[in-house]
Length: 293
Ligand code: GUN
Image (cartoon, rainbow, N blue to C red; front, side, top):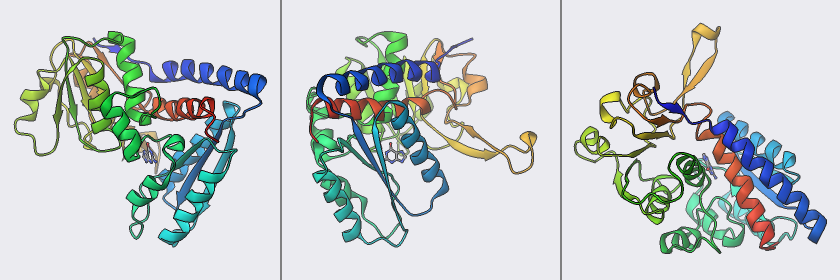
């Protein structure tokens, strides 16, 4: 039976360190890390995530700002909000919650965020710094950074000689994940929806990372015995067994079957999920220490 990687416990440990660092920064330099989260429209799942980010920021002792804009906000209005946050010295980190409503173009909005405040790591500057190995001045996308912490909990920081397969090539996760694994000396394969014979490629992986958005797609016979399996998927499905109208989350990995083959595996929920918000707090702390306000 695979070891269950406890993302909740690892996240709590990192949050404790961030909270201590935030208190020290206040005591020594009178700087309070400031995080602004911008949300446009009424998507209930996005509102739940954003509220959780705000709560966690406060727990870490941060100055937390939520900017809630109506669904009909124009591109120019949204960009003006970002400009004001860029110029606000009490704000060290800015996150624009995605996806944006369909009439808005997310790319120019994200590129407008000052790279020093881009705690999502999505700007061209931060993506470029990651690709070139500059982790000293850049900021790294939160979910891959969090997945990397979980991988290090099993394998340590040097992945020399290990084959890693990432399924999914998004800017938010797959691409930065591949870069981080490469930097840790893994041999990386980027697989995606057009990859031929995906199960065969996955079976090579010592570290298999699934970010497909397709519930329980990764089956037990896709997994090399003893491999570490990181599940980034979150699909909400009806759970009538929990009562009328109730739902539950499942991942991209068929957990019940794969845990019998893998060496270590992240559950959903309680694996990668708690790490994403945690790394957002860590990035905000890093930005505040660099005193970019
Ligand atoms: N929506 C879902 N995940 C994320 C994330 O990591 N960052 C942003 N900005 N939006 C998201």
